View 1: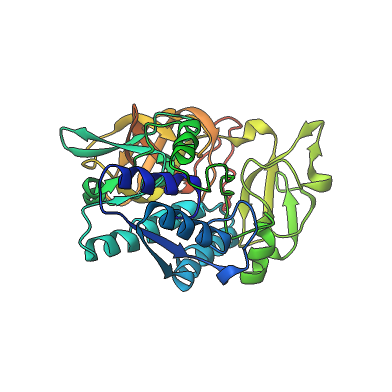
View 2: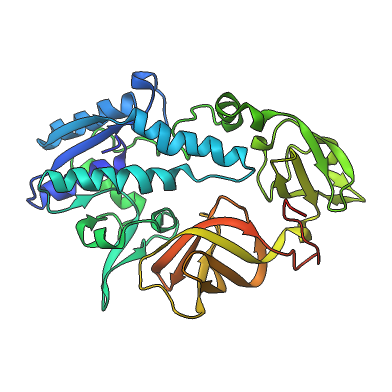
Length: 362
């Protein structure tokens, strides 16, 4: 129970269905400094809100101090990833390392029959066992952030909101008399209240804030930057004097953190047809040959047709059409609505649109 409307409604619906419900809130950071701040998650006011909901529902409620664990598993990883010149997904790490690892273990230790959360995804029956599927509402679907679930845990998990729209969830909250019915959704990065992620990275990894060169695809120096942590592949803002070249708007096409270089080029240079994916998790039996599927490269993008070749260690994704591939983001594999697996993008290959290699090693 994060203190938001989604997990609160899940607790209410499960209690209403007659289950014995135990509410668990993870205290993740700042021990109360976020009281009164809108858009937070698992801190300050949110813990207070979760407790009020539990009291309203008449269920047990426990708060777990997981600040040290969250810092090491999520915040430190966030800073490390930016320092490598990649773009992290902190919600994925939180799901992978805390919510669906530590909390699953806790739930089993308590003798619970299931762990229910407020994620917008579905678990459906399939011939080979429970399957993770996209939510009914594509605008709310969170299956992209859940590909790293343990396949063996799918039968233990419940996602009661997977078939609902947000308006229906808020209607349930109002019907149940929950004070969080109109509470705003949490922001994308809950532990950065002002949205200035580069400042946090600079404190934890000062080298990521050191200035360096902005260069073109040909190696020509076009300007200076204020730290690789301020950039991600595909970005066009914040390039200063390097924003335009020969009348074309420049975009970040690669980040060479070792040499503190940001490589820029025209939009066409963003196109890639291949990507190498590591930290792969399969929610089906790993494919023995090329797998034709749809691949989602960013949370807010539509899946793209591709082939995936699994060698037992890494997956190589061959896209049918060029796309922007950002190291550090996830590549998630789908067959229709079903999540087959996914992993973290480690590298992009040759720029098939521009005909040049613009990887950091180029």
